[in-house]
Length: 188
Image (cartoon, rainbow, N blue to C red; front, side, top):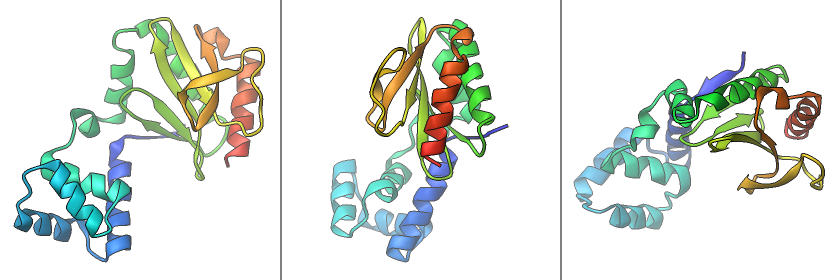
């Protein structure tokens, strides 16, 4: 089975980046920030930017100071359950895609609030998102591939420029498995 991750992995990576880029760890930065007494996120972000702390590391420090969103503290299973809570008939489609993806090789499943990323050790190769009450979209990162047939331009995210819409578990057929395999191979 593929590894399923929630936001904790992202938090750990952000803390590692902070230490690598600044030479100071999360605890040291939190102490500095408390001493400065920031009362707004905007002021904290501006100060961190002046000190060269940007991106994930900056976001981590802002959340440490002003609080984490609820979804950031949820488990991977809770995030996925939340995506399908009002559309349980789509969960078997998601499960079929995840089962197929897990069979491809070293796949990491990253649960987020509204979607799930499928990731090789190198990068994201697909996204699974319940887009409507009747459809799950499978976004695919396929370089140089033009849309045709079931493979359509994606509205999910720019990193996955193509998508296949799925309305039943049976839609996860040989064609979908082939496209999923190609996306995995290209991004491994």
